Length: 218
Image (tube, rainbow, N blue to C red; front, side):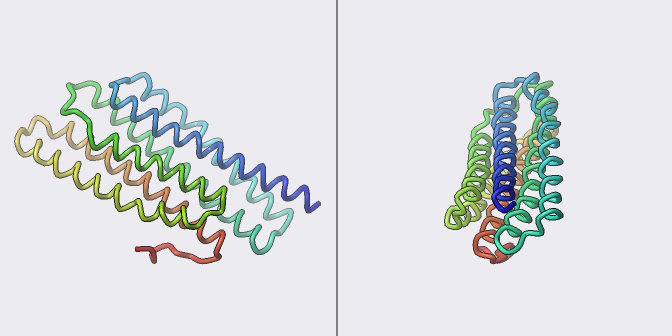
């Protein structure tokens, strides 16, 4: 019975990682859609959110089943409750990819406002945070998890830089306002991706050290 339980825990972890890989790919693909002005790809990302939601339901149901049937304690209990929280953050990262896809469709109907320089850098950093938070989860690596938390400040700095630059465009030419606002929104969606990656990293620290660090990390 115990061996079967740990096999189920491993299967749960693999499903969670598959979901994580999918949302990472969603961010990568939607940014490609933005940079290449590819509306078809943006729509594919929006449509593929159904797969993200299906994983969300699958992981949640499996966690509840494991809690009900095995009544786990200590480390196993923290693992399952952590998985339940991580899946919520991954689903919301998927939602941010959809939000970016929708703004991309709108932007592609008009001429490009400016070359995109900081947005792809911001996206790459946020995407790496997602990957590293999941790597930390798999390896139970709290040092890596803390590095993810620290990296959130980089993403915030990108958002502020993008806002200042686009504000200059809007002040100089009011016709740019709708496009600039959509780009500002995309930067905010990427900031939320980084926030969710930080949440995952904080939960890894809780899982391994039984220490709740949310709202306490500098």
